[in-house]
Every structure is written in C-alpha cells, then in structure tokens.
Image (cartoon, rainbow, N blue to C red; front, side):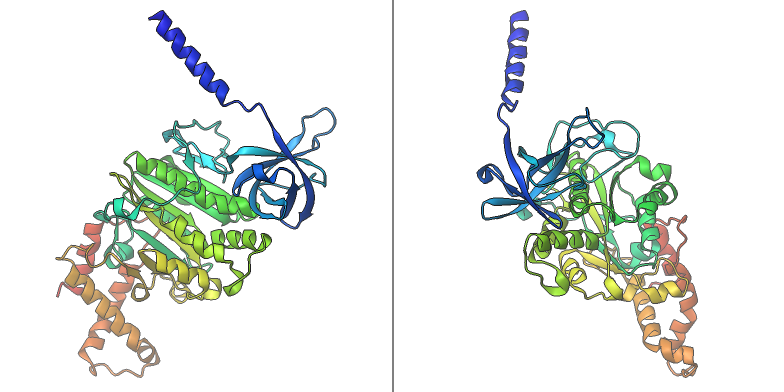
Length: 454
C-alpha cells in the first residue's frame, strides 16, 4: 500500500514537472501604432489569439520587479505579429522584450464559489472579497456553440416576473431574446427586474462598456443582496481597453456554460451586445480590416453568431436562457448591429422612447415585439386572451392619432369604441413598478379580467 502511494506521488510529481516551461521565447517591440503593438521575433512560435507579455521597466522605481503588459495576437503583417494590450501601454517602448506564452489568451476555471462575486474580463475578482476558488475544468473564452444536432429543444415557459413579457412575449427555457432600446428609456431598470424575478437557478450578468458609476448602482440598488447571491457579474467599463470590453462578453458566456454543464437553468444577460460589436470593430479596424456598413468590419458579423449561439439549450439537462440588450443608435432599430442580432435571436423586445415619455415603464411596444416560440409556448387556454388583447392594442394604435385629435366620433366603430374603453386598464397592466413581480398564472388571470377570453 505504501509503495503504491509512493509511486502515485512520483507520477503526479513527474506530470507536474512535464508542464514546467524550460525554454522561454522572446520577441522585441518594433513599433506602436495607435492601439497596436508590432512585435518582431519568432513569428512561427506565435499564434492568432495567443498571449504575449511585454516586459517594461519597473513602474514603482528602482529595486522593483519589471512589470508586464499582457497582449493578444490579433494578426500578422509580414514577419511581425500585431498585438493588442489588455491594459495600459504606459512604459512600453521600442526594444521592449515580448515573452511569447504557449497558451491561448483566454481561458477560465469557474466554480460554484463564483456565485455572489464580481469579476473582470479576465476572470479576476474585483469586488475586494478575496481570491476566487478555481474549478477543475478549463473553459475557453471563445468556445464553439453546442452542435445543432445534439441540442435539446427549448423547454417550458420561463417565468420572468414581468407582465408584459410573460403574456405577450412568453419566453421558454433555453430561448434567446434581444432587448432593443435607445438610451434613457429604462433598459437598465428592466434588466434589474429580469435579473431578480426570473425563475432561474443562476444568473450570469455581463456589463460591457458600462459607465463606471453605474456598476455599483446596479449591484447594490438594482440587483440587491438577494439577487447578487445567485449571480456572477462580469464587468468591463467604458474606459477599459477594447480587448477587455470584448472579452467581458466571452467570459460571461463561459461562466454560463459552466453552470449549464452542472445541470442548472441559467439566465445569461449581456448589456450590451452593441458595445461588444463596437469593441470588435475597433479591433478589426486596427488590424487592417476593411470597414463596411457604419464602419463595422466583417469579423463583427461573424463573431456575433458565434457568441450568441453559445446560449440556448445544451446537450444535457441544463440550459442557458439569454437576454441580450442592443443599444440602437439614434433610435434606429434597423442599424447594422440591430439588424444582425435580430436575425440570430429567437425574438426581440422593442422599447420605445415615445412610450417612456408617456410615463409607462417598462416602455415595451408589444406590437413591434416578437417571441419566436409563440404561440407554441403559450397554454392553448390562454391564446384567445392574448390574441384578443393584441387586437385591442392594434385597433387603438391605428386610430390613436384621430382619437387624440378628437376627430373620432364615438359610435362610429364598435371595435374602436371597445379599444378606447379598455385602453386605460391595458395601459395599467402593461406598466409595472420595478419592485413588483407577477407570476405567469397571475399575469394571464389579470389580462383575462380586462379583455375576456374570446
């Protein structure tokens, strides 16, 4: 027995020694062009997406160890590698040594101990609560989506706690929905409601390109202690380098994939996909890609489906239900990123400034929003109620201008008269306070009480 233990320890020690790097490969910084660092040296040892650490002089003064600036290889130009930093380039100059790492720039080892924690775009804790326990499995940041033929179908309806979505835009487990909104229409408040009230085991929330001051407000006021306890929050603020902003979305999906593989029902939220696309655009332009519509590069539109398709049902019992916000520029819901994302996801929730200006929150335009799992996701007994309510909303929307101008005469159309009579109650139903949660069953009961079932 003792001999077996000794041989086991020896084997483990030899395995550990086999992973020790005995040879270090270096290049040299030859130029810095905007966001890019050119590195000359053993290009054959470098790889696309690989890691390079630029060694700079000690920033704290004499006697301190040299600092390193981690970078990712994003391309090659002749005999030089094009690298982009994860941090500041302060102190980097021509001739600085660049250590070529024999590893990909992105992989994490999440564990259940990450719940309740806030991490950066490299998976490092930033909440001051100490180190993170690492899990046994390595999850690459840029993993491939599950194979289409091996995926399970979407599951039963998912209770989001928001009346408007639960009834008119029912979402299923494993479904992916986009929230399309301009700035200042209540998108962040809606996200906080969904994060707290959705009937999921775990929430993984990525804040990509957010204002620095809003992070603590979201964590403490919007998410709260109870919401944070079942969540992992990934943060890359707007002042961080573009690689960090892009990586934040990848880390968010990688953490969600870990919990999905444990059999959990995961709610994955990213705010916003637009800022991920902007970061990828900046990386592509710096690497010499040609700009297309609104300056977006071709890799933006190839990376979007690779990222978003990672959400959804898995091959096992777990599933990732995705809610991804799209910040529409100038309230243009047909701009390139919005158009591309809408074509990838399983539905879209459209928030409008006009509705927000009327004081109705969440400012969702039901008639312009779609859940692609409807009507299959809806209980057949509830479908007549939903269809009748939609018809009332559509009738009122068609005649709204005439009604407000006083040009419509009561009695001219029974359908319009009914819509005018029901709209105050429907408007109250569609509005909801951020501290108010409503279950799916209660939602349908209230809607049926307003419009009836047939």
